[in-house]
View 1 (tube, rainbow, N blue to C red):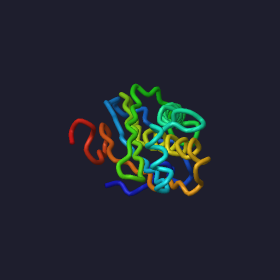
View 2 (tube, rainbow, N blue to C red):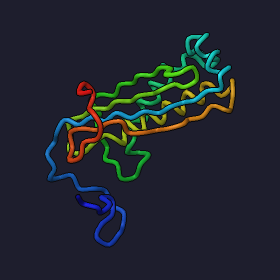
View 3 (cartoon, rainbow, N blue to C red):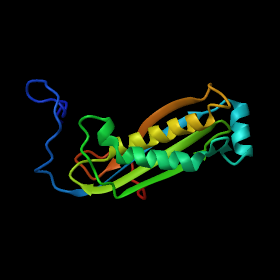
View 4 (cartoon, rainbow, N blue to C red):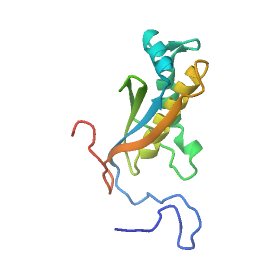
Length: 163
């Protein structure tokens, strides 16, 4: 296993990875962000069908997360600009106070999309926070993690449909 950091050259200077000689393959990645609410806030959100003073919380989070995933290269310096072919979200309460946001991204390309999935899930979670902060500032974005990636040199977790 190569233990060198891919975004450093031989002199230790930052660089974008050269993907020119890589083969384009079908690639996907799934990331998750968890948002924890105080019990009374979660109960109110469930009572209103996840609608707040600013509008439809989930729909707004999906739009924001999708836009962010598509613009990841503008936020993270060494990410390649990618024309994503798919960006899907699943957002649901997984406990009485915890909302799970899953972002799955797909493309056929020479480089992976895990940063796009992580960015999409992160920005969707930030949008949920923004849409709900009038109810409480004790909302916590608890965890952002890569659940799976496939199609590259190193696969992680189970790709969607293979679980």
